[in-house]
Amino acid sequence: MHPWDLIYNPIVDTDFTGSFGNLQYNPAGRITYNLNDRRAVAVEAYDGFGPLRRCVPYDQQFHEIWAVMDRSSSTFLGLAVEAGIEFGLTPGSDKITFKLMLSVTSTRTPRDPKFAGSGLGQWLFLPHRRQLDP
Image 1 (tube, rainbow, N blue to C red):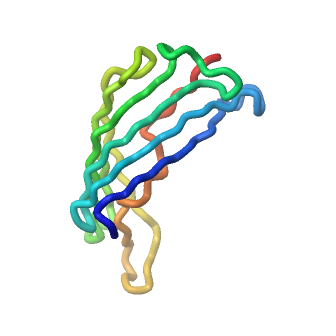
Image 2 (image 1 turned 60 degrees about the horizontal axis):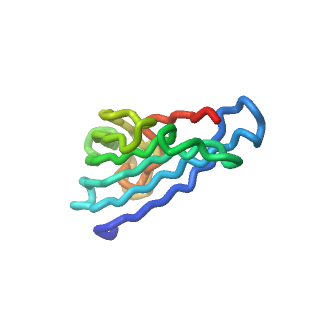
């Protein structure tokens, strides 16, 4: 494990109301500092530009920045906790949002027959998603 993780997720998303013509560009990024193998702090950014064929005006886009902390444990079913606070940067963003994510990994390792996993490198789910109308 390295002390710093840089993650960029170039998300192309859809609201499923109009085939590929409704694809939207909603990228996300994360910079993480791993305090140790169980704790980390991070800054995350989520953006929504609207449909690929025509981005929505800036005041309708959402751009958000998050301050996040992660804590994982292999002693209690491999429970991982992520908590954070978001600040919206544009009029189309939520002004402030809190998140609390609890997860349990189902990965079993040969060395540990119990549930194990740090959860720190598993950044799979966005706290919330919003589709932008064209």
